Length: 342
Image (cartoon, rainbow, N blue to C red; front, side, top):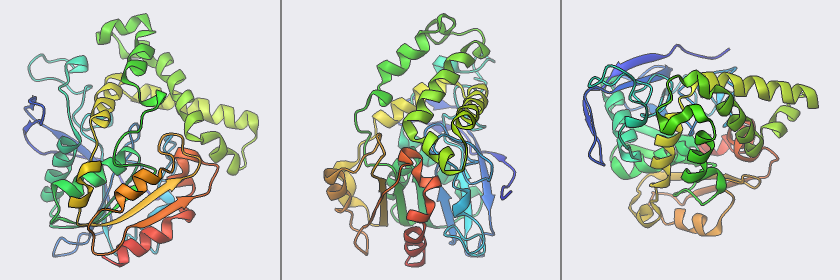
């Protein structure tokens, strides 16, 4: 199993774009490989909406799919060449400051009182983390789905820091979809009377609701096709999906779903793509219902001003939104070319 232990690091107080303030901000992360003496061989891998900084570890069962096949000696994310960092997003549920963290003002978890965050806030936390780790420059920021949003935001917020970005099963905005409806999410949570407008006395009471939501998400993301390709039968696929959903439901704070979805819905950089100077790899899957191939989005992404024309890959796959990990062979060589051309 190719995995590294998780670490936590405080990056100090944080003034948020929308006016909130965090007295202390902690970020959880994993790191692979060795940082070069000049601090310029680093890659930041960014994870999806409900995944974590263990996205690169073998054995992870996220609905978005593990990227373990992409990392290691001789692989596109080559640990003999690069120092690779994957950090848990601000506002998430796996060790970084988020709704499940203790509020200094009240001594209890923030919950529904966690302040609104943006992609710029998420990137700022990552920037501070990398600086503390000694990173001076990024060869690339690459990630799937919400991770693609982060890659784009990095190229806009820190243009002198980033050589290239990989935007995978993602887009420069959140396309409208029932799955990305804030009202729909809030209605699903409110369907459990224990939610009580977000003042749920025990998050354990939300586990069954979250597990049901997770099973629906995995079906939408194409996880059945992924498990079938791994040789599981129908009953085994169902059992594996239930186990993955139950595990996630025990770990993920439902308030994080709301906080991160609001940040995603506020993200739209289509009118700023001509500001991007980094080289761009843009990867989509033909069966992805969340970020389907979109000629308008492709044309917009082509307006980036990188040194080389945008690399575009459209995967033909049954894996849907889960294709970035499960279908790594369809685009991994393009990632390798992107990195070697930096």
